[in-house]
Image (cartoon, rainbow, N blue to C red; front, side):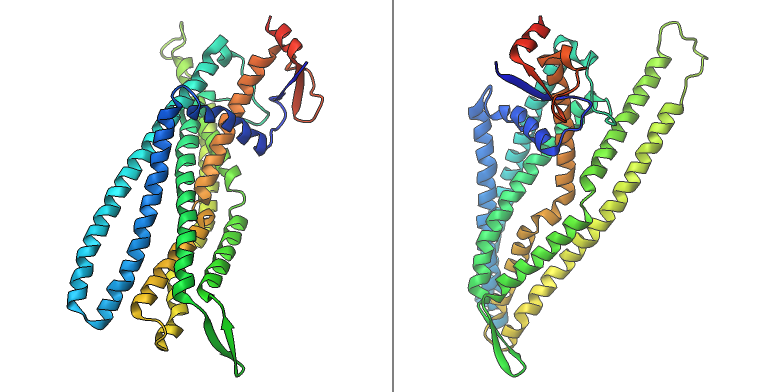
Amino acid sequence: MTDVVFPTPHVPVDTRHLISRFWRCASGFWIEPWPFHAGIITGAVIAGTIAQMVLQFRLNYWSRDFFDAFGRKDGNALQHQALLFLLLASASIGTAVVALWSRMTLQRRWRAWLTRHLMDRWLTNQNFRHLRFRKNEDHNPEFRIAEDARVATEAAINLAAGLLSSVLSAVIFIGVLWHVGGDLTVEVFGYGLTIPKYLVITVAAYSLVLTLAMTLVGRRLVTIIANKNGAEAEFRAAASNLREQGEAPGRADDEPVDQKPIDTAFDVVIQRWRALCAQLMRTTLISQGNILAAPVIAWALCAPKYLTGTMSLGEVAQAVAAFVMVQTALNWLVDNYAGLAECASSVNRVASLMFAIDALEVAPAVLPVPPREPGFCVVSEAGALAAGE
């Protein structure tokens, strides 16, 4: 007989199993019931991202031609570039609008599919009456279905589209830096030292330092966001319980209710938000500093070549714009660390709900039995069928 393996509610489940469980369920959107429709919308998101990047590449070359004409004080060329900018800007704005529509449509449909799937499993056989969660975990499946499923789908698509855009941007604009920047020769103790493709090397090193710094500073962000979401869910549950107590049959109108649980739950919410604020302040120091420093660093790197006449004003503007684009692309993790943490937290909470429902549907009779291995309970198919009878 084949063994059916599922995590027991009272033993922690690692992130790898949680993400795997979430994807096994959520990927059903592209499989059933209309995979063609889901594929069309997904393709539109990818095509919109590629189109936006092509237009950014063309605008990068436009900036070179515009600043070269500006430096030459060429009025006719400036007028031509102004008209060309209107055309490129219109195309870029239109593409951005279409890309937004396709991305939000995909988010809406994926969320609808996942939420209905979770609700069906939650309500089937009155599973909502018997759910068991891990120790130290909030017991609010309603919040996970309503809020965490929304965050998990919306954030995942935003992050995936952003990552695709960053990869394309890095590939395209590294080529620009490679071609425009070229090599740089500097005097060191009377000797000429040549740095090959110095703009590419510098942007890669700068991005690596920023990514390492953000990873170090924000390493606890996922846990902090998960704790904050759990506290919000407990606060809502406490408020719901208080209302149910007040509306209980036979209860006198002037009979007081116990407000201590809701006050305590709200105090925890405020504490968790304070911890989140402190963590985001630290990550903002890095991200905001990078926004200010990156263009200045690029101008400083291009200044030696511009002063010696080996790089025109237009090429400097083009290289600075490409440097910022590549740096932003390579620092995708820095710019999206908070969003990635929020998405991971919600994915983990939805997957934990799925595991809890799995435990009820596979073999509810064996849940109290200690697991054979740390974190898992192994039940044969025959035992599961017998328990179902």
